[in-house]
Every structure is written in structure tokens, then in C-alpha cells.
Length: 297
Image (cartoon, rainbow, N blue to C red; front, top):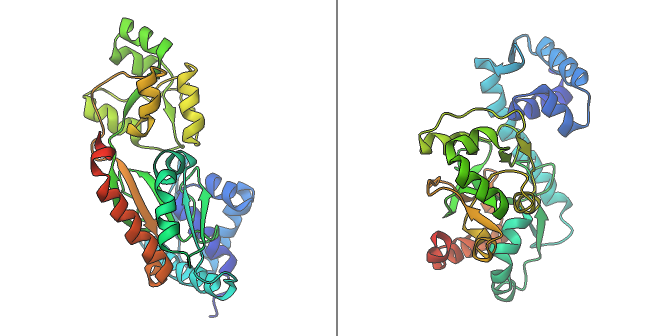
């Protein structure tokens, strides 16, 4: 029987990455019902289930897991081939990252790369979430976290431990009520839905993690910095906020750190076959190594 549901396969790929029909619908600009319908048609055409439907959750079946692995490889190869075919700027590469990282770490060093590689057209793409790089035509992303992502090839760039910070006014209140009560009662600011950072920090601090009803998700880290300064809650940050810490606008409220957190290069399998991208990757790894003291200061 000829396979027909290629549209459904792309919907499945996104739903499997997000582990949520609702989140997949948001990325694909579809309704949740449309995503569910596409998955149902796909399963009918395949002759087997790819998801187990659970109460308020989905999980991949064994066959679904195998299919997702195959689809990621196939779509990754296809996206790269299309990118090469449509490339109207030879030697051009697009690097995705948060503006927070770009302005606080990369920008002061970037002219060194541009001067040394005049033949490479570099484009920086602002990112505020862990998006699928292929459809966004991003060759490489710089991600913050523990590095435990399975959708792309991951290389550590540099370690940059995360610790909780608060604005000056809220820090005084925290000192009065105590840290344990503070992290249980005050809003915890998150970078995205489903982020494990606060859970990891509570474990490192020996505290019980309680999902706060009034937690606030602010994907843009620069906006989140200002929200903390304004007293809207507590957030996890790293030494790239050194200026705010030195000026007293932010206060570190605990010595407990997520020592394994930091910045990572993320790119599709086979992406480094592009010479320009390899040049950038080698350069930024060299810069990170040369400034290792700065990264952990």
C-alpha cells in the first residue's frame, strides 16, 4: 500500500518534539483539533499507533519512537538540501541565539570573526525558545541549559552556572522571610513552559519543588532581567548579569548554583559539512576557551 500522509508526518514530527498536540498546534498555526485529526489520519495510513493518549498528556509508542527518529533524520536532510538549493548568498550562515547572549557575550568578540572571515556572510537570528531550526533556516543555535536535548547535535560552548537572583527590594523581603519560604511563596520566573531549571535548582538546594500557580513564563531573557529588577519575582541567571549584580540592581539570594548549566552549540546532523559553519564553530569554541576565566568568574 502506498504511503500518502506526508503532511501528517510533518505534524507528527512537531507533536513528537513538543510532546503536546496543543504546543504543536501553536507552532504550526493549526487548531488542536486539526493536529489530532492529522495524527489520526497518519495512524490510519500507517496501520499502527504512534502516540499513546493519556490524561492530559501523550507519549510515543515504541513504533512511534522509531518513526520519529527516522522522520528527524529525513526532514533534517531535506531541509539542508533545500537550503543549499535556494542559497542565494554563498558562504552565508545563520546563527540563532537569545539577544541576551548576543549582547552580553558575543557582540564584543564578533568583529574578530568578521575581520578574519571576510568571505562569510553572517546573520544573527534572535531566538526566545527551543525552535525547530530547519523551518526557520537557522544553521546553528546557541542554547542555554544542561545540554540534555535530543533533537540536535550538541557541543558544550562554556559552563556558566545558574543561581537565583532577585531585585534589590525583593531581596530585602527574602532576607526577612528566609530563602525556603521565599522560593515557595514568591513567583518563580521561567524561560519557557516545561523548563526543568527551577526543579534542578531545588534538588541542588535540598528543597522540595512546588510548582507555583503564580509562576511567570517570560521567554526573552532580557525582558526577564528587567522583570526581576522590577520585583516581579525570582529568576535563575548566570554571570552574564554581572553589570546588574555589581550595580546592586540584582542580588544573588543563594550560593547554591546549577554548576552543570551553561551555553551549548546546537545544530542538525551533518550541518558541519558546510565549511562556513565549521569555521564559525571552530572560532567560537576557541573564543570560549580563551575566555574561560571570564565565563566562571
